[in-house]
Image 1: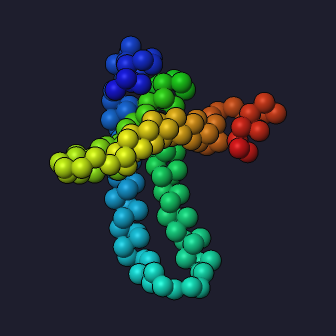
Image 2: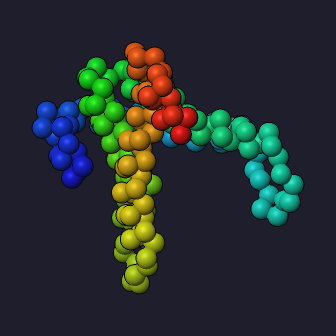
Length: 158
């Protein structure tokens, strides 16, 4: 909320961009859940052999987030800065709610204090920066009308 109101998104009231990106993140997570449940076999914890094919398929399923980012960045009709900030903040906010806030809400009723909640909140702050930077890279790679020049080619490689 602080990040939203401290950027141009809060000044222009572009919460619809963040909400649409958040729902896209939820849809991507549901798709990943269904694909993993249907395709991947159960792994033995005691298995010692490594399967390259399973690992490549698992990474391909994780790329659904990038496909969701490309979809929402192309669908939102605002200028580039607002698009990158709104979509990145929406994805990061939905991730923070689903993977960090809900476990905190249900586990905060325990009688003892654990540091994992503090670490999760710090990780959530880092995740916001990470998701906005990934959204900027997706925008530059797939959605920008400008061709890759010598200025932004190193950024795309990173």
